[in-house]
Length: 184
Image (cartoon, rainbow, N blue to C red; front, side, top):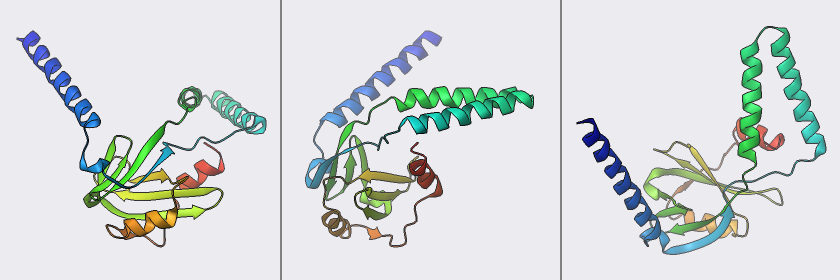
């Protein structure tokens, strides 16, 4: 009985994986581009030796703080955080295709129909920032940030205004500002 259930679940997982792969490879209305460009999936900041020395000093200070105050779990958490951050940070950003179509926005394999996008904002401060921010409902990430890079921001804005409302008073989240400031 248990082996039948396990077999059924395994077959279902395989069928779902095959269906998702077919969806990824098949053309859809999202692929009929009005505007299209290639952008990195995230920005990787350049960090010098000074940044590394400061981060190492802060980490060692936090670990020693935890040790001297008998908070070994805090020290362990700092060590685990440093290891996980180091492993994740080694990853180089992949270039993804960004497509603005008549029915939505496609970023790599992710599809955002206009009905699920609450509003958008373009942050353009050359040469440092050129980003399209989308506030999305029904998604794990509440705000999706897409790098504009070679795309003309005015052209993207004019097209998106046909389908979405623009958020004029966009304030960058404190967490995003801190991540940029500390090059995390």
